Every structure is written in C-alpha cells, then in structure tokens.
Length: 310
Length: 299
Image (cartoon, rainbow over all chains, first blue to last red; front, side):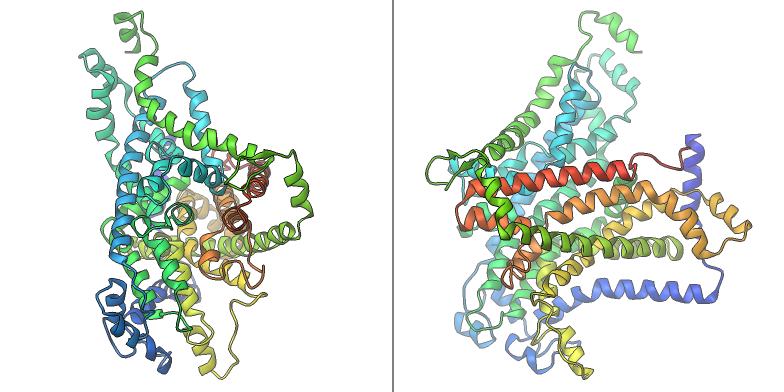
C-alpha cells in the first residue's frame, strides 16, 4: 500500500497537468513571470543602489542602472575610504568595521552550527537507536522546548549570560545554542528511526560499541540529512537578530552583521540615511546566503519540501 | 536478531549506561538554557526586578497592572492586526504560488528563486523595502509620482503595520508555498483524472478536491506560521522601531522596551508569560479545530 502511494506521488511530480484552455495557460505563465520578477527585483535594486553615489540618488530615482556608478558604497562599508571621501559621496562619515562584523557572524554561525548539529545528532541517536527507560518521556521534554516562544527565553537567558560575565562576547552569543537545538534533535531522530536495525545488531555482534556504530554507520548513512540540517541551522544563526542585539551590541568585537546593519541605518547625521552604503552592507550580508542557494539550492529546496510533509 | 543480542548478553537489556554520554550534552543544554530559564522567567513575572538589585516578590501585581495598561491592549491590537494581514494574505498568495509551481513548471531553479527571500535575513529584507518604499527617494513613490499620482506614506500610523505585514509576506511566501507544494505532490493523479472524467472544471476541482486533500498540510503550515507571526520583532525594530508613537509596538518589541529600555524585567517577564500562554492556546485550538494530524488521503 505504501509503495503504491509513493509511486503515485512520483508520477504526479513528473506530469503536472497543464490547463486545457489557452487563456488558462497565458494566465499561468504570466503569473509565474511576475512572481520571479517580484522576487528578484528587490535584490537587484540593492545592487543598483549599492553601486550608485548616495548624494545624487535623488537626481534619477527611476533609473534602472546605478546613478553615477561608484564602488564607494562598498568602500565605505569595508572602511576603505577616508572620512572626507566617504562624506563627499554622501556617507555618514562614521567608521564601522563591517569586515569585523562579517567575521564575527561567520564565527558565530559556523561554531554554533557545527557544535549544535554534532551534539544534537548524538542525542538523536540515543532517542532512536538506543533503548532505555524514560527515553520517550525525555524526548517529549525536548519537543515541548521546541514550542516555547523565543522572546520568553531571551529575558532570563540574557540575565544568565550577564551573571556569567559574558555580555558583549561572542561566546555569550553562541552559548545557548552550542549544546543542542530541539528542532535539530527532532529532525535527525526522524531519519535515524529509519535506520536498518539489523545492520546495527550485526555490528554489535562483531564487537563494535555504540560510539563506533554512531560514527561509522548511522552518521554516514544520514549524511545528506545532516548536511541539510547544517544548512538550515546556519541560515537561522546567520540571520538571527534579537538575541545577538541585546547580548552583543555593546562592543564591536561582539557585533554581528545583522546588528551592525541596524546600527548603520540609525547613523544618519546628514538627515536621510546613506542608502548606497546601507544597500552595499545589506548585499554583503546577503551574499553568503545567495552563494549557499547557488551551491546547494536543490538540496535546500528538497529539504524544505520534505520538512513540510512529515 | 534482537533475540540474539539478548541471548548473548542477557544481563544488559537496556542501553541506559550507553545512552548517558550521548544525551548528556543536549540534556545539559536543555536544562541550563531552556528549563531553568523557563522557570526563572515565570518566577520573574511575579516580581519587581530592575536588574541591578535583587528581585522582590510582588504576587500578581504585574499581571493586574498589565491588564490595566493601555499599551497592553495596544500591543494586543497591533500584533493581531499584523498577524491577520500577514497570515491572511500570505496563505492565499502561497497557495496560489504552490499551485502555479505544481501546474506550470518542474524547474528547481524557479523553486530556488522563489525561496530566495527566505534565506535573506529579516533585517536585510526590512532595509531593502524600507528603501524601496521611502517617501522621498524610494522607487515605489518615484513611480507613483511619475504617473502623476500623489505620493503615499507607507510608514504612517495607519499604514505602517499593514506595510510591515506585507514586507514579511514577501519574505515568507516562497517558503510557505514550497511547504504547500509538497502537499500538492502527495495528491494522487487519479483523483484528478476521475474529476476530469466527471466533467469538473478547474475551479470546481480545486475547491472540491485539492483544498480538502490539502487540509493537513495547510493546518501544519498555519500552526507554524501563526505562532511565528505573533513573535514579529526584527522587521519592526529595523523600520519603525514601534512608531509612529505606538502604531507598531507589537508584543515582542514592547517586551524588549520594558526590559532593556525601562529595566523593568519583572513586568517584561509577565508580558512574555502572557504571550507564551496565548500562543499555546492558539496552537492547541488550531490543532483541535483543523484536526491537523489526520489526513483525508489515508482513509
């Protein structure tokens, strides 16, 4: 019965039924075109603005091409221009080191994700392959944790990080996510549950302990899912704002890119924001995600689809 | 094969001792950063706490004060307005996109493009749209001006909340559409064939077959998008910062204001406890109402 169902759904993927009427088809393809443009245009507009000269943006707001083309926006973002040169192009003249923020975000997202996925995988192994009393009750506790709204935990966790003396440090930002994420455990447990237990048993009989089975059998078999999870958690960590804002906003050494962008926007000594610089910064912050999409787009699309059905 | 293992080592039926090193790190993480803070958060809701001196237990005073606070009802109103606009439009648009993707293209590239905004952070999305919708220089108002119409203020006290709700529709519509799209693929082809033989038109087929069969997926999507939507923070913080006056002071932003603006952690905790209870009730009611876990396909 199950196999039959899978076959059918495969078939429906291959043969999307086009509407019979010509009008229906025209409507469909027009909508699809509008959708793609509506999605990509704002991203293009970031690039167009980033390459324009901030001071003269008003002269041709409708131009599809950059107004008075310049790399200055990017220069200001990376602190490569002198203060006078930056001011001349319409920058705020404030020096913010985006390169440092970029590095901070990289460190936080990479370390958090690797550590979190590793420990979550270990826990997922215990919640799926191993059999012990209280297992499902404990897992239920993790499931409940998944439903607790973020803002509710931000307040007490902020106090905890403060008590530990870790405010305005990267460690303080990373700490709550280093050991686990309920979602990651839940996600991997689903896949580990599908592991062929006879292989595990055979390895046991051959004398392998569970650490070896975990490392050499279960993890390699779930590798695609682990990569998928890594990507999803990296995106989440890279895009996070509320937590790193209150924990790390106080010092440049602990300011993440998203937070720095917000600060950059509010620095508007000359009235209107430095739109070119701001868009250049926003684009720089978005580039890793766009690259990720280009490299692993198929995988990401597939994994988000599968997260929905299950 | 399980029997063999038992026969070999009859004394060790349970993997309890092995499980400890596997679960311990995650359990420590859960305890220190979820369970204990959770309890502390609930406790703080019953205290007066300015962060610098020790919390003082004051019973339910915070909650009494909260229900009399004008800003509480304001937060409830504007957050609800945001959720209603955001979820209402997003669900319809995403459903439409999902059907488009299902019917007109098999291209993963297009699905990837549609997903793109979701990968870009809230902060960046907010900044880009803040720029596009800027009153003086923004593209949208420039086009409106060019067409000879009068410019539109997108972030006034009346329009700011709907504008922010629509910005987030743009960010999430592709992601939500992909979730629904997966549900569409799970509907067997022969159901449509049967409808076609019976002479059902496009719209009739969609309403009587697609929608009902999609219900479990829609229910799942609604549960996660509504609870997420209630916690809106980033977009508001970056664009209006809660203003004009309090027109966009949603719950999360108000909580943050109380905690870090007024150093009133007790009151802020009370509000966040309320928000958590509210979200739990909504999620519970939804799963009951929509019978989320049942699928019509299985029967």
